[in-house]
Length: 335
Image (tube, rainbow, N blue to C red; front, side, top):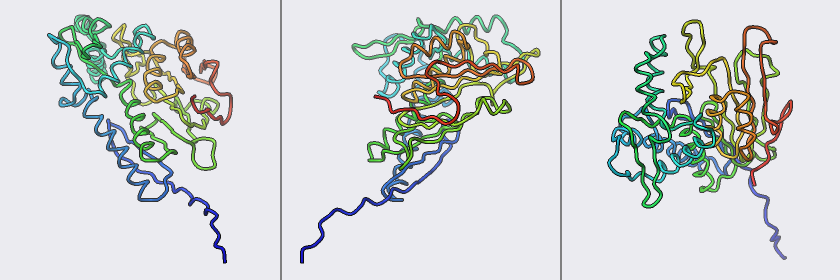
């Protein structure tokens, strides 16, 4: 008797999740894999990659590669850095230039000073603010292509990749999973989210959007995300009241002061590195200039939500032309 040689249907993928506290927040990785063991190994490898990058990109850890580089400022010659740090600094400089300095990786002296203000409840002293601002700007960081190196030109400067490093780590975690043959994955760094392929039988991963807690339901909603990333940048969880004015933890590199709140920007982009940096820059630019800025970024969409007083009439919303409409929407895979 002739045996049936028709291939059997592929076994259904299994959903596996795992988490770890990294970079100061809880990271959750969810995958669809061929087996529980393969999924668990993939999740662990992705989280291990984030942990490795924290030792490179953190400005909170004195032993990180970034902190050791900052401590060497001013450098007498271009310093050699790892591939990861070079990649993040290169993209950070590109976003700095496209945003006219609203995003700036040399903002470290200002963020350090602003953290002190948030603890004390008082604005920085003018002399200290002037000194910090003198160490910040495009002339403080110079990238040399041949031979590849990083020059820090001003005393007291300090690099801060808080507005881009987490996004890069999300992208790298997704890349690790793809290398392991896991094509459907979601990496969630406490609200900064990147996705590869959609879950089996779905158009995308369902991502809830709640930019400013307590605002009307119309400001919230869901996005179906696949092969893209989404980030919300704002002061919903980190703000300070000084002299009756609410300020964000996000510092405007041009003034050295936290931006006014309450406000939030949600950005959808082809990758998490871009979503992270663009959301920070757009938040600093504000809804008018920020909308124009995001419209010029290929494959990106954004929405600004701000509150000016009490009541629904005081809530403002501005969105780019590519922002999805009401309800649940799928973000198509990038080309």
